[in-house]
Image (cartoon, rainbow, N blue to C red; front, side, top):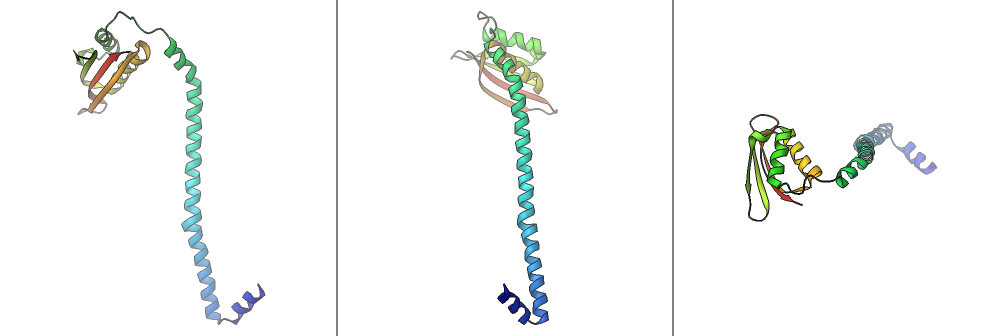
Length: 158
């Protein structure tokens, strides 16, 4: 350390100032270019952890309900998928836009024109969760109004 001090003292005052300014600039670059971005990244990661912990806590509270829904008796076994889809569409208020047709492989294509997206999701959720219907595929296109969609959904009995 003494050798470094001796070398620094041997420099001209102008060189000493330049060296000190360079050291200060280097320290500033390290702080602003490395440490602060790293700290911001850590804060974002900590926020993600908190969000995921909250999501996990919520999922753990609804898990018993989901388990009960899964083990609950599913609708009438004698009701066809088409009849079931139509009945649930009436219950959710989207039957006016419903058009169905059978496919040859035991599945049914259900087409909706200009329905509220939330109502469509409620319809699909009830079919799947309460009645055990399987959604094979779905194609959903946005409409001219926000929240309104057209959809074609292929259903099959489980």
